[in-house]
Image (cartoon, rainbow over all chains, first blue to last red; front, side, top):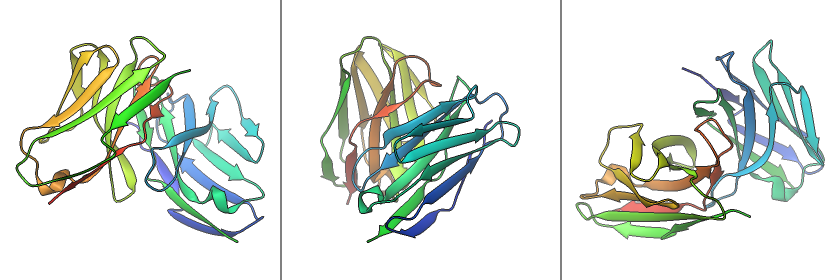
Amino acid sequence: GENVEQHPSTLSVQEGDSAVIKCTYSDSASNYFPWYKQELGKGPQLIIDIRSNVGEKKDQRIAVTLNKTAKHFSLHITETQPEDSAVYFCAASNGNQFYFGTGTSLTVIP
Amino acid sequence: SQTIHQWPATLVQPVGSPLSLECTVEGTSNPNLYWYRQAAGRGLQLLFYSVGIGQISSEVPQNLSASRPQDRQFILSSKKLLLSDSGFYLCAWSISGPGDTIYFGEGSWLTVV
């Protein structure tokens, strides 16, 4: 089955700096890669996603890049703000099953 | 637009007592429904998923069961809770199969004492 690895597990950045979270996957059939943000005590919320026919997608301060050859994808947050502090999960789907990464706890220091 | 409701938000139950967590989805028909468990704020573990009324697939053998009595209702149950059942339980839905975008509810905190 699919194996999704996510790094780092914790990340601290100064407000205004950029944050990058990386995930790798093993199943070459995976073709959909969403990212979720989970605030304390709440359910994960979809923030951005990318499909395998696209290499990069951007939505305001967040962007996701995908390298299918290397089987990795990354979340980029620019100009970080305190409200970006949360746990972020990546996921990979092969059309039959969702596989989540283990999460990255991001802290933005004011 | 679609919305998902999950309740209760928090629950403290003694060991050996029963459990019932409920979830409903509004604004869509015949959704795929899921129950996940999250321990220690990480690690989303799929417990059950359902593609239709009365159709339940179990991913992990355990002390829990799920039922789908109506199209947009999903229930997580236990007859006798164990300490190890404590955790954050998340209901979720998708439009089509398990590989489609999953949308989560707000979660239910269960503490077994």
